[in-house]
Image (cartoon, rainbow, N blue to C red; front, side, top):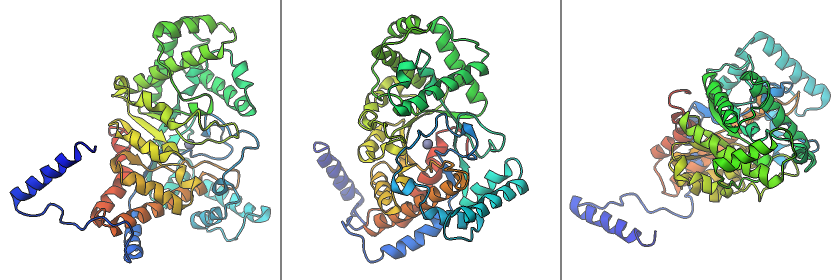
Length: 450
Ligand SMILES: [Zn+2]
């Protein structure tokens, strides 16, 4: 950069001389906002609230629905302060969405909310209930990243993102499950998911040949795409390190044939097989126009290993020209490593999703994340809530609300600072808001979502 910048500036000066006026007409950017900051924020926020959003990552559904995710929260997991179900902001959410009249969720008060939702579900039968929640949030559509789709979500407004991890776990998983209590919960659920895909494709048992296994995997992707799936999602960071070596097909085939009948795999063999499978799925994502979503952030469960799942581990895959036709979405934007992560979006086919960052952080901190992203690759970042049903009282509804409100206010604040510091104009700020909240994500799916 140090080498080419003077040339760029010299080019601008030559251009300025040619057209006879200065190129730098706006004032220079300032390190502090001006006294107009609050006024700009107040002007931007209502306009940002009017932008219909596309929620790029969410887990909508009712708390008693086991298909909301392909895995489950491990027992006794620590929760960061704001994501605990005693967060008082959730009272504000229930108030805004349902007119909740109490200041807390004591059991007798919480009953009011349970009854209210039950009554609304009756009034708004079928898909109308969750559609009405999106309407209240001014969310046009929301990804449903779920194991399977239920009949109570309207596929027009809740496009499905299915899970692809289970293809990585076809062998004897006894050792994998025994590694720690979290894996004891996660790995059996991957086995369950793999068996559901087998039932879907009428494959009674895993094929003896590796070629047939890959055919089965591709058929699931193709059929899921036909059934409305717009992308495949990996939460592989929960189960193993996200460093992927680059084995040959023959190596993967050897391992498959060695272990498919039930022998206990050596960890290094299992990993090498998975490395091949992961890359195969990434390539298929390009062929089938199924963007690849990857969980890149801290995760739930006390055994989640942040250093082994560091988003930068994925760099060798993301910057590999063999995958140039695959679109990658880094779900949760690498949080809390989002500062490094945004430079991965230099790749034309790599995008960052901000979901969970807006829940794990308060808006004052999330504003800084968004500002830094908006100042780097503003056309490569997308909005998501990571909403999830907390429990029988606090559902995906309240979680949606908190994610949407936090993101819109932090976005308005980040843009207001950028305007006040002379980085961008107010009209450019609104263009960036449209891109982040809706347009950039929608464009990734070639007309399949709106
Ligand atoms: Zn999620």
